[in-house]
Length: 574
Image (cartoon, rainbow, N blue to C red; front, side, top):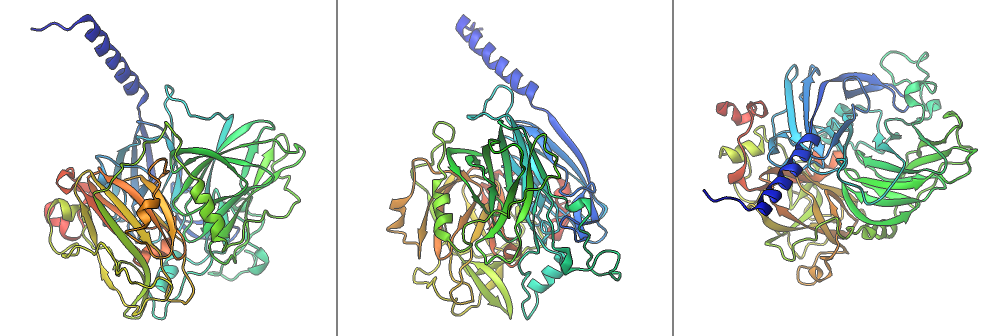
């Protein structure tokens, strides 16, 4: 037997010591949730919502990088299934726990219990939410915060931290909203009634009856309800704080402001960026930011934290929370007016902010220099049999009753589109005019990549069916982060525009906005075997078909747990 040299013994000992440290720090984080309907009044107006363990927002999850999270979910809703998507978590080795209904699993039926188990392998600010129908709009979401282990340090310092979930809010139930979206004639969900910060807002109760005067079944408003007291952010004067901000908005682009306070952006979607200062922050649905601010203002006052709608003509009042300068009471409300954001249709300001986001050198890897495949996806608004729909490359996505991952794993025919979806839309398409003709087709398209393919994705925006209207769409990719290589105006030019790509320090994201009449380009590595939705994170847009699925490394997809099956054609595989 060959003996190891002394130096080799030492090296092995060091490796074992590091592994022991990592094993000691990694733990199981366990939660037991019961999901059900409940009545709540987050903006003073009582309505039915969906929540876990009777909490709104649902319970926060705190974990350390490397931990395994175990969530046992029991569905007590009597009439519908549920799933949870862990937004921003890679799910490497566990693609079946990504929590996308009919893509990674069957929904959890009423009365059933389902256990999610997955590893969180990167520290950052994340969240989770329902991913079946429009359950996120019904309030089914919560924070997921992953911190660094003790042997790692952040490249910035602070004295304390707060988390903020931002959302828009409707009084109309999601079931009425869904029916309207699927109706002929079309009934849009409309603009939100309120904006919420950490689940709290304040509607003008003079527009609705007081709870004591309203007949049964009507909306009621109680301005004195503790549910809708403003969220409070306590700070000690002179100290610096980290804000973990996440947008779970269903429709709105939100602009976040700390009255009289400068913010330093240090992270985006769980990745470090070159720090830069702002006084307001655009955040699109599905995105997270970590910012630092110092409590350095007049200590005799409290201040507003605020969100306003951008990207759409705002018909919703400012959402407000209170920055409480201790020892001032939380009830000491600022006497100033609500903070004002940049003009809603000032796209240049939004684009300028997006371009300031660059990866922090030494902390984030650069992108591969070349790609193996380029995919151009054209997002359009269309009409199918009188229904208003959204489509990608003229296919409006609909779920199949058999989960996509199961159909790929078990080679189940008749589930996904038999013909691969188109890679390139017509290069002569006029993005500045309504689609002509406006028709599209329904389908369950899946783009299939080999394991470790390097893929460039170009998302092209266009005019809706209404002349002179092009909307902002935040696009989210499950199971991955990607490098945002660049933005452009007008129709993407495959021979000219790649020369403008940033291949030096592009930011890593999991959600990126495409601006009106423009395009965005990103690069990702298909190194996570599974089936991953790629879709607009506006709840109504995805519900109306604005999405597709990326599948990769199909031969390497692991065995699917039985609890993820049982619907559609998977029944014969039980």
